[in-house]
Every structure is written in C-alpha cells, then in structure tokens.
Length: 338
Image 1 (cartoon, rainbow, N blue to C red):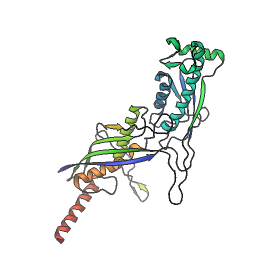
Image 2: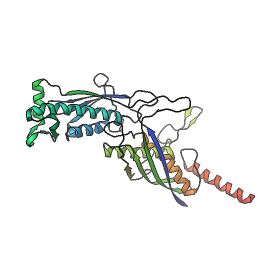
Image 3: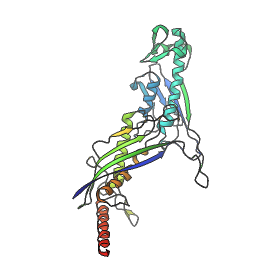
C-alpha cells in the first residue's frame, strides 16, 4: 500500500564570518578603452555563479552596461585583491557590496568628465545604454567619454572594499552578537511511502526563502534546486559505510546519489525579498541555506504518511520498514496488555 504525507521544515543560516572574525572583501574594477569592464577579485566560483552575479551588479550601476562586455579575471593572488574565502555564504553579500561601491566610484568619474563635455553639473548627468545625457537631453557616447579620460590622463581603474558589521565572540553563557545576519527558509515536501517495500518517493518540494534582495533570480533558483537535490540524497540514500576501517561504499554503484528520476521535476520557489540594513545591494547569503530544511521536511512528511519517525539518516527502505515494524509491534503489545 502506498500512503502520502506532507511535512515542512524550517531553517536559518548565518552569513559571513562569525564570532569576532573581521569580514572584508576587496575588489578592483576597470573600464578599458575597448569598452569592456574588467572585474578583479579573489573570489573562486564553485558553481554558485559569482561571475554572473557580479556582472549584474556592475551592469545595473553603469546603466544597463552589456553583460557580455563584463569580464571576471580568474582569481590569482598575483593579480586579484583578497576578497576573503569562498564560504560562509558570503560572496554575494560581501563581494557584491564591494563591487557595487566600485561601480558607483567608476560612474562618478565618468559623470565628472562628461559634465564638462555636456556643460552640465555631474550630479545631473544620466548614464544608460552606452550614453551619458546632460541638460537639454544632449547626449554623448560612453566611448567618447572614455577617450577623453585617456586624453586627459584620468584613470578608469578603481578599487573598493566592503566590511561587514563587526561581530563578537560569545561569552561563557553563549550570549553575544556572534552573527551579523541570518537568512531563513521553509520547505514543504509531499512524499509517497510504500508500506510493503519501505521506499519513499518525493513527489513535490516547494521552497520559501528569505535571503534579502535577489540579485540574479535564475541563479538563486538554481541554487535552491541544487540544494534540494543534494538534501534529498542526504535524506534518503547517501551513506558512507566502513568495515574495520575499509570503505564498503567505494564507488557510485554502492554509494547511491539522486538521479533525475529521484528529484521532483520542478521546485517552485518563492523569495521573500524584505529590505535589510546590510550594505546597499540588500542581499543576504543563501548558498548553504538551500540545503538546510530538506531533511526535516521529508522526514516530517514520512511521519505524516505512515506515522513513524525516522531518527537515523538516510531513511532507506530498510530503515523505514524497520520503523513500521517496530510501530506495529508496539501497537500489538499495547493491545495485548490492554
């Protein structure tokens, strides 16, 4: 017999460095003569899409500057500034805010140079779509401003930093300002449990994420989908086994990971974009958060379906069957005692 159940799990994840460790990101931004923006930052991309996210921020500040003309220099300690580690769900927040500052500084230079060319105060100059516009809607091309900068010796290379609000180590009672911001998520899962085989099929997972302003939606959605797939494997099938120090699950034939048949076809995601007082871009970290609520949502859905709580992961068919049998035995014992 197959039974269905619905469960939810809620989690939170601290972003940035914690417990008194200073958190600083440094960036370098340059607009070249051939109208390409070059971002230099020691931020390693592990698949989270940091080059594309930074490009979106730069493009927005420079008035819809073409994304395909923005390059991220490969991280190299010899040429790129230190941005801190790729971890702690911090890159979009820290490096994103730093590149936002750098972009604004670059725009200020361009507007200042264009103001003389347009006979317009710099604060009134508008930039967008490769042009700068002054009073009377008089426009000049960005390329002309870049050439004027070169002619007059004005550098279009800027550096910027962003430092997160300071934290502190916790006291002996575990109290203190140890984390400067949290992101939150709630997942709702629907499962189908086969009471004869113990197999669990995840039919649906919906995600509700509070990670501040979403800078690049498609990247955020993919992060959630990846977190769900990874969390589903952790919850239902992935288990490293050893015997006398030797691994028994030493290949993908014995260490099972989710396939396309195990993961729901779609993971509907709703982002709750609440303003936050952390930097100007309004984003919070969500990389690790995407994984956190998966297991409790699925385990709670299993309980809703068949009335047993799985206390050891992964919730393999064998463990589900054992839990069902133990529950049956307990109920029979109570009836006998009654």
